[in-house]
Length: 472
Image 1 (spheres, one colour):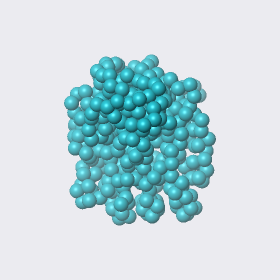
Image 2 (cartoon, one colour; image 1 turned 180 degrees about the vertical axis):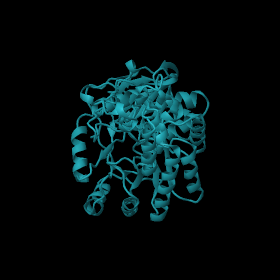
Image 3 (cartoon, one colour; image 1 turned 90 degrees about the horizontal axis):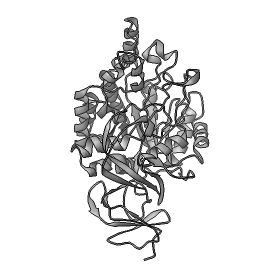
């Protein structure tokens, strides 16, 4: 056996199914040996550390266009550096079609933003907002065949939502092309009705975003999305599930043999709707505005049940970063947003804190096993989105994407220690036990001790195959 370029020695390797002691040998950016002892020209001592597959954050928003003049706080450089500092080696952001534009052109424009600026690997989901005959008949099928094998549809937001006929037409294309559909499931009409009602009553503070985006609307839309998927015989992922009601719809579908997958996020295990009250129903609550919003403690308990019992396949950040304070009314704290919660930009930052939060709240507190942690944050995203076995596993032949983890390291989440572009974190002050101390992308260290270290952006865009769990 040839000498390896790098050996990682002395750590405890953890996969989605087991853990064991071994050395890892890396050559030319790939794992070539897992053995009791490995010969290499360079080595990293991982004694006392967990050796995990690099995190895969399958739901992030970077440098997306907005319709209201606000500006996302992370471009590809800052967003992927932050992701690497948080233990991630791959992120999946969204190439969003703007209504009236070509889907293919939207993808090409997004590549121009990403090319040469990524410190992790990336792979794009698509967002379908304007399913014209050209998009459905030509552009979308061609893009799926080019390796963009997942796309997202919205059931709310004026500039993104599809009606039921459009959803069914898009689902039908997904079935023919064996693509995976991600659904933002919230009922638009119910949200609009509640918004109008609350505004009429003078209830315009950020807190009322949580009332307008009621869990009832999420439950109804989840059931409707599942029904459309059943009618067209297509697997779907219900993204950012916030509580018990939509979970029960997903469980109902699975008992009937439907291929419905589910994702949840850090905000739904750490925050509640009360955080949107701010200090005293003031505008500080806008820092926590996202959709769906955080719910209540019963919802948190339900989410933990789902993380344990397999209801959830994915734990993603839904990183959607805005500035709170920004010039020229481009942040959350803009003049229009101060008139009503409905104008507050929806989204919170979280790509760097996703893994520490789930490890600390889940593994360190005994709620989930370390193997389940790896499955939710790395292996399942790779399998579901067509990246396995290149990504998401510690196995010979896989990319040497590895996160070294100190399970005993205690830290506090603070804005001043994070690397994202936002000027705040909604998780400020959260006490953490367990933190990534080194992130390795294809054999090269890209972050260490919470700081990005790569001098140059070496991340690549990944073409993906068909989901290994969604289709036969």
